[in-house]
Image 1: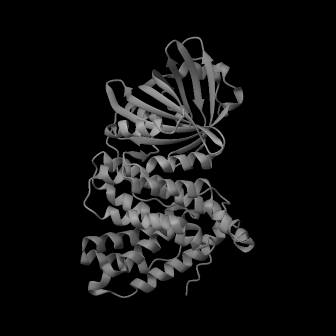
Image 2 (image 1 turned 135 degrees about the vertical axis):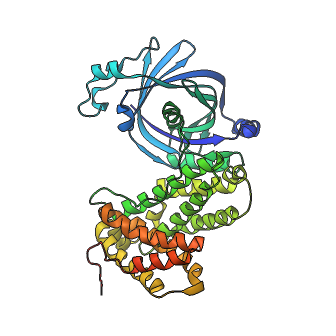
Image 3 (image 1 turned 90 degrees about the vertical axis):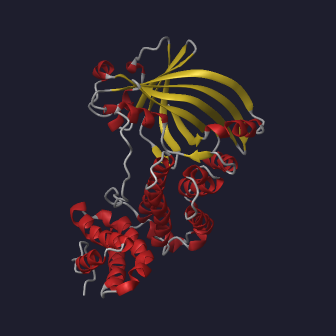
Length: 433
């Protein structure tokens, strides 16, 4: 088993010559392009996908390798997951050669061997550079080709940075050097994700509203902080992908995702001091200003400002940059129960909303939109400790008010305002008067 740590970027085709020149300048060992063919396998009921596993055979001339990737962590295109590689004599699967302990409970390997079938393929030219950066050895692979399932296909142009030895900090530092140039975009949409989408018919990807954050029982405050930022980053990247594919409305969701990052940092600001995120917040503010300009999606999404900001957030998360700024008291708070923290703060944010909207505001409703967005985002990050059946309707009334204000629906504004301020708390220790 190897622990795969890699960072993925999507590259504009017209940016490839300049990128190749930049990679050549790193003075690494260069390997000329090689044609690779990968076949991905799955069962009819997507058993592997449901367990966050990916199975493939890679063909490189007359050499074959069987790989399975197990569940891991993906943050902003940085993949950290176990990977098992087995050399093969031909392009025929032999699942019994993988360690028995990697399979989910109840999976019979011999039955799985019979059930899996080819689902999609990727064919691409791979050009590689292996460089030493800091204390680490890093492989940079430029892939150009296509993902194909049946009659459906889409082009592929990616750059992958894989940590061969050393530390993740060096990987991220090298990535910062690369994203300073336009034309590459940090993306979380893997080759496998694209292939599965094609295999399912390539339906148009839909805009997704921001969700209520859900956490495992007994989560700590620190785990909630991480999950909040990961949710915002995933929302950003998903809708950025739609935006560059021509879905103009997805830009609004990118803007909401950036706001959610700021609101999450503010939510936990009583524990994590502002100086821990000063640089990150400055980058977010500058990019938010850029998004107000009437520029094409490609110009903004593939620009260096977007790349540097997204990578800074990834680095802040993966490296847990806040920890160096915590004193003993803050460390105790951040290790405490998130449920207890959420109960206290839900009361505070609900009170802010009631005070702001307890009376009709006439023509001044739009003045309260920043506060409404900030407070509803805070509740979105806290409410998941309760059942969605009670938390979602509570939040939906405030979201309805926000939409009515943004669209200028006066009758709807008063309807949702009355509904929202009259709601009973759904959390314990509400402090209700």
